[in-house]
Length: 248
Image (cartoon, rainbow, N blue to C red; front, side, top):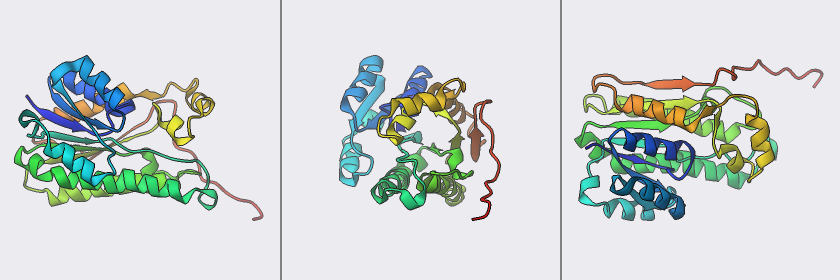
C-alpha cells in the first residue's frame, strides 16, 4: 500500500485529496491545525488515515509529529504540499505587513521546510511531490501582491527541485488552480461569507474534488512520466486585460 502525506488536510483541497487518495487505495498522513477536523477524517476512514496535528510553520512540532509516525506510515511515496493561504485583498500600499509575513511563512518557508525534511524518504521510494500553486503566481491582479509572489515561488521552487532531483526517479509537479470554491475567500476576508458568496455565486467554479482528482491522476501516472506544471481554470474564468490609468 502506498503512503501519502497531505498538508492542510482539514478543509478544501487538502481534505478532498485525502479522501480521493484513500478511496483509491492509499493510506494518508493528514496534517493540519484543527484536531477536530482531522478526527473526522480518521473517523471516516479508520486506520487508513493517520492524523497529526501541528501548525505547518512550527518546525519543532512538525518534526516531533513526523518522528512519531507509526512504522507503517514512514515510507513516503507522495507529498502533497497543500497547506497555504491568502490574507487580505488590499493593494500593497494599504496592506497589513503581518498578513504578508504570515503568507510567506506558510506558503513559502513552511513548504520548503517540510519538503526538505521528507526528501530522503521520498527519494528512497522514488516517490512524487505535488505542490499546490495558483494562477496568481503567473497572472497579477490588484490585491494579489504577496500571495501571488508566494505562488510564483512555489512554481520556481518546484522546477528547480525537479532539476536537483534529476536521476533519482522522484517526480515533482505543480498544480496551478484558478477559482476553486473552498474556505479560501472566507480565510482571506476574515470570515466574510457575503464576500465569498459574491465571488463564487453563479460562476460554476471548480471544486476541491476537481483538484483532488487531478492530484490523484498525477500521483498514479506511470513512473516514467512527469507533469511539470498544470494550470486549471473553470470555463467561466479567463484572463483579464491590462489596466491603464489616464491622466495620472
